Amino acid sequence: MTVKPDWLRVKAPQWERVGNVKEILRDLALNTVCEEASCPNIGECFNAGTATFLIMGPACTRACPYCDIDFEKKPKPLDPTEPARLAEAVRRMRLNHVVITSVNRDDLPDGGASQFVECITAVRNVSPHTTIEVLIPDLCGNWDALAIILQANPEVVNHNTETVPRLYRRVRPQGKYDRTLELLQRSRQIAPWLYTKSGIMVGLGETDSEIRQVMQDLRAVDCDILTIGQYLQPSQKHLQVDTFVTPEQFAAWQAFGEELGFLQVVSSPLTRSSYHAEQVRELMERYPRRVLSAEC
Image (cartoon, rainbow, N blue to C red; front, side, top):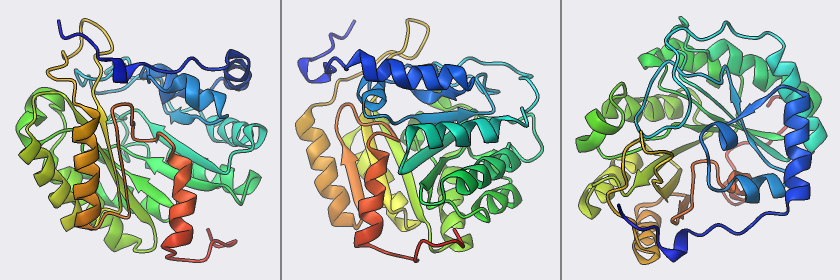
């Protein structure tokens, strides 16, 4: 068993603040990827009053061997009250930026696109100045469903690449590398004003050259923002860590990404796809693509 290095130690959170966030989530019966996916940054994010909301769950129709979210072939029907409850949480937490993600819902004709739209609309109505990031599944390549989500005008659309093409069959067996790239490319074509984003896990047996090729592939489809973080095994039944990547290697990837032209590269052992996601507001000020107004 590979021993976890010192640089992966997480600072203990202020549990009073964490408790307040959890109280809001429990009161409104909401799920977060922070809890469902056993994110190592849960303390820091909850302490800062932020969370990544997990809609249409908590169970997923895919059983990716790296992910700690429960699997169900036929999950429960969508809850029509979920968008309003999520918007109320945004209001209570006074969020400037919210991340809305979901489980895969391959059982639904639109992959859950309509529920994303309802959630975006509900947040806009309650907190019009909150910027919205959606971290979406691949929708099984249903590009009409993708267009439906983008027509609701989120500021950021995020879809994680997760790993290098060679490892897809083992790490992301129901995903397709080319489909991931196409989703990001089509997002740019459908809504050129938004910011596209993707994330990669490392430590699963990939090589430095493979990671750099993925980064080049993402820039080839004009992806704006990239996150790179260390994979951590959620339990003994999940994929094992092959390597704990050093902070120096993460820094090298960040420098390479900046050379490639990403607007932002967040690369460190504890980085996750929505870690410090609120920093996108600063990015939007430096690289504006539209004026945020009532049309958003």
